[in-house]
Image (tube, rainbow, N blue to C red; front, side, top):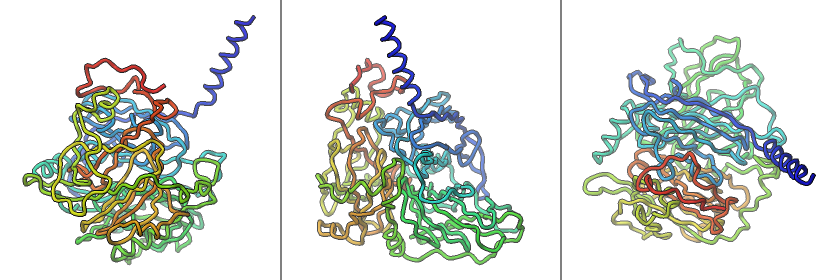
Length: 549
């Protein structure tokens, strides 16, 4: 009898576990080369299921995502999930510091959870210059049904994946960088993989019903340039950016820096006809733009040829940033209001300053953070760490938290900084160059509390927004300026901090931050997945027993 009771109890526990598990969403991707001509010049691109841009990942908060990737290219491949925090699971981050590449002719299945996240994101291939060849697509996460969204349901929603584009293939561009040269300016700007000629023959990319409101998900998936996004005659109400609901201000145009995403509402309340959507370059000595059409149902009236101009100067963009505010009363992925987290009242335990620089190393162009230009070792950093051979692959903390005012040389090496688990840290990005920088930090969102011209000093903290700064994952740093972020390092793993400029990133302007749980607990980080690919110096080593318990 007792044994029967135990069996019933075990069954009930098992059943409860199964029932309680969050839903799964499955995708199969066949990745291959294909020929496209988005700017009129035939070129090789990376396609997913023959699509450019790639297929959307569509899910809800806390869903488990399973993506089986078949690599039909002639080179290794990885995908990373830009802005997805991958709680406790940097194993699936898809960067060369965390994973072995998917070799040609093989497949690998990613499995990760979009835990406690909502919003507009994207994915891209992370090795080399693959992102410059395509393989990029949108990733949207809806709120759970029980959590209210702070605006009415839209009639429909549409993606606008915008980005600069080169007509040279990624292999040709890689050869240029490997010679130590710059790839120069892009050849154009694309919107959803194309650009309209406005010759009167094109159909709208999307259509709207008069009087209805639509949600637009806008991401700059490009490789170099900040872009200004605007729609002829239609203001945009900002409602979300990179996982945070925002105060719902209205804008005629938005500066979208590389790697950033915005979600806006647009109401079809103008004369029924076609309208031009524009994404154009900002802060450059050249002007490039991409165009698309958005139309009204039942109308075939052509768009006006008067196209609104983009703003001038980066000070306008800086001032726009200051209008972005966290919606303190709205719930995001969790039921509690966003404003219930009082980040401005937490004591800072460490301040780290990251300064970007550019040098010539034996005649070849290199980019660096705090004087170190990162290179990826053959053995992924996280694997080396897990197997206990990290000292044979890289050194920790070869950069200082407070670099010298003038960095006169660079070191070319893996760049890995350690952070103490659950420390609340202030990070300052200083940009002494004349180009806008954009950084993404994997595994985290952070509070972008300050951004000003000049050099940072402790007195600048007086200008911080410690009440309603937006929590996000990508930060821009204007020329000869600084940006400040605050975050708690509570997600154990090996996380990539990277420049969103493809040339800078490929030539060393990136690094990794290692966050280890001192308790080695499964509550904080997962063990090496059984399906994880093994490579480098650990390939033939015995697999360690579970490190986390």
